[in-house]
Length: 357
Image 1 (cartoon, rainbow, N blue to C red):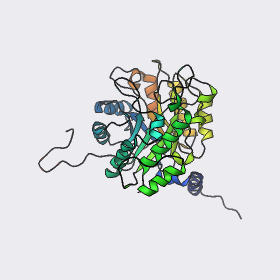
Image 2 (cartoon, one colour):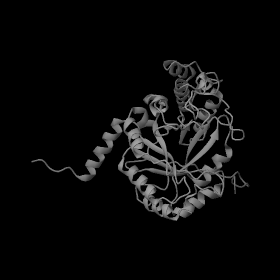
Image 3 (tube, helix red, strand yellow):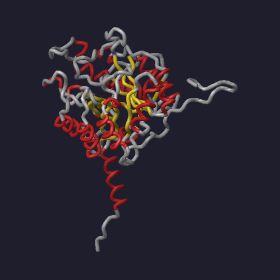
Image 4 (cartoon, rainbow, N blue to C red):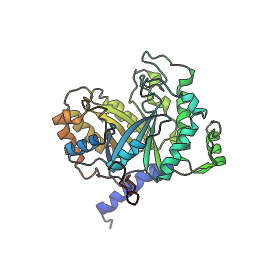
């Protein structure tokens, strides 16, 4: 007689099948939440009080905090905010100068190794602190306002140093170096396998950092035209631990969102930026997006974007109905309040005080 399979064993079998469908690199290094859990987070405004106010408004501690930093910059203040928040970091890296907006390094220069010293610093930073983190380099490459985008807002190629090919190669180099995990000869071999020049920074080798790399794009591009579609910027399955996209209330292309999710079916999926973006309360958008995430089982990360400055129109506190919808959704047990091994402040020196106290 065939006996019915107990529900708990069936759930375990389905989860193991999901893990088996992911490449080995995704299973080992993607920093996935356990089982059916989804990590929920919020963006870092630069003011640690904002994380607390967001948590209080929702009566829920976010497991993740996403900081936006410029290529080459150090970020000790960000690390202190991660520690204060006790939230696992998502580090978005842009090449735009925060003051002038000008580009500090091109995709071609990154691919050719002229930014290697910075990548080596990142690798050793997260390794030395033993701090699990998600690295999100050059997000939204198909958004014309980003300095590393291939096409301007008229749909014209910016220049030869910004061709999609250079973006893909730059991303591969970032992936290899921030992950590390071998001697210099081994790192050079990995670079050579994808057509990249050897390591240009001073290093005998790179330790294996506890990081996962997230490739994220707009669902259909801005501007929207065939050459600006996500597929032209994807670095390849071997060079991305996660795939994701941003999805705001003022541009709800649900067909494109689902299409992107389906296209990259071997990867865990993230929405590293979502939020109310047109200064209009939209609880229907909020409820639908949270339902979409739970209904698409590879979705494992959602980060609410609250912009910068206390008067930002992105603040969820400005939209009571959307806040209520989001709060209701994230109080489901599928959303844990903390990620494992979240950052904590080091103990104070003898006779001293802890940083930030």
